[in-house]
Length: 146
Image (cartoon, rainbow, N blue to C red; front, side, top):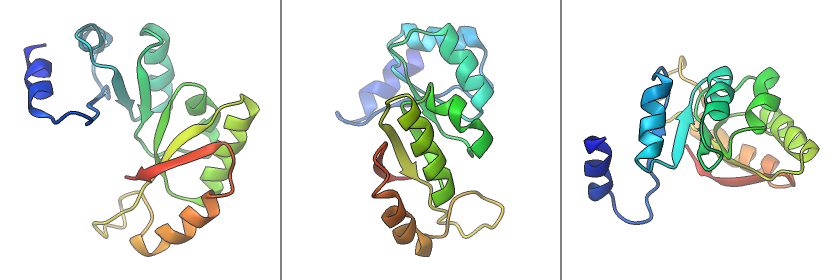
């Protein structure tokens, strides 16, 4: 994990390093955690829950993939952060699932800046409207934009 130490030396204090576990073998992920990596990101709900069950509860999980409504319950039960909120209906579902377990879910609104229609996220012109719709949802903490 020499690479992890080098990266840590280069990032300024206060910047959170998130290791993306997507497609990595569990042994490699465990080694990174043993070296002190505290935040892990996962793209798929099934992998998130599988990896979370195998790693220490001290790991802060970030869901960074496109989130389908039928996977929200699974993700909310594990992830401290959801980076990919791109609609009010998704935010409302996350809010309801978080309320059901007494959790305040940290979220980021995903904005598609590149203009590519094949990418997820909402167009920049719709971000203000989504943020306003999220504001009254009591079990969400909108932390920023992705």
